[in-house]
Amino acid sequence: MHPGVWVFLFITTVCLRATAQDGPIEPDRPDQSESAALVPPRHVQVETGFSFEKGKDFKLITHPALLLRYGASRYFELRLALEAQSLYATGSHASWLSGFVPLEIGVKINLATGQKAKPSASLISHLIIPQAASEGFHSPYVGCILRLAMQHACTEWFTLSYNVGAAWEGESAEPIFLYTLTAGFALTESFGAFAETYGFFPQKASASHLLDGGFTFQLKPFLMLDISGGWNITNRSYYAGTGFSIRLPN
Image 1 (cartoon, rainbow, N blue to C red):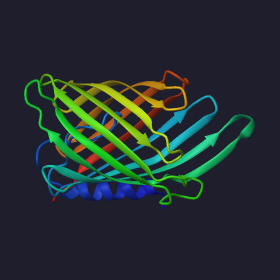
Image 2 (spheres, one colour):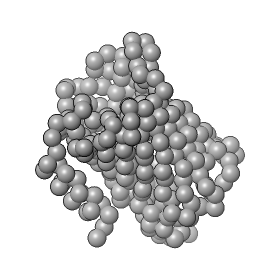
Image 3 (cartoon, helix red, strand yellow):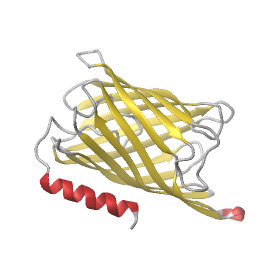
Image 4 (cartoon, helix red, strand yellow):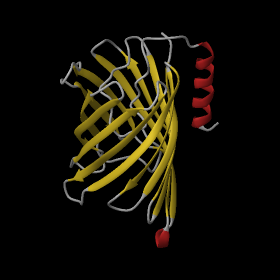
């Protein structure tokens, strides 16, 4: 059975018995800025989604992207990321490849809790395991991602989030530097929106800059749906995606 179907069945089962929990959910999706917030202690949070990206000479389908987060304490959480992809190369060298990209395991560590002008801040680190992937998706190097995630609660309806960091994705020993900047808006108690710019700076290639935006809908304090889309200013590709996040009862 397709992994996306298993995810849907699992989340549906949990929703039927979930109850009110420790405050509203704060997922790391659908924007590219990772939230500074941690999952409450002893809770598991599941964040998953599907996306389609199209460029001049490729199509990429993610089905699904899955992030599992566990609140180990007030100060750090454990993370596991798994993603299935289908990549279609078009043009004169047409090809098709489908499977799981390398597994990521990591942590998010609380550095500061926001107060007034002081932002919330967390450090995120992921280890990319090159052989924990489908054939054709193995990478030659062990990878690593480091991010500093910061967030300002400017008003009750407006937040400003930003990340800076670097990724060694496993294809080479050279880092790719990254940035994100996200404006989040609470349109109602349950309906939100965001607008974002982000980019990547490889050491030996041209930088890539992107714009995206989307909407979130909080069905329950522990359950959020999302839809988003974006455009790569540099190579003129675009993407659209949708997904949901749920915090499970402890």
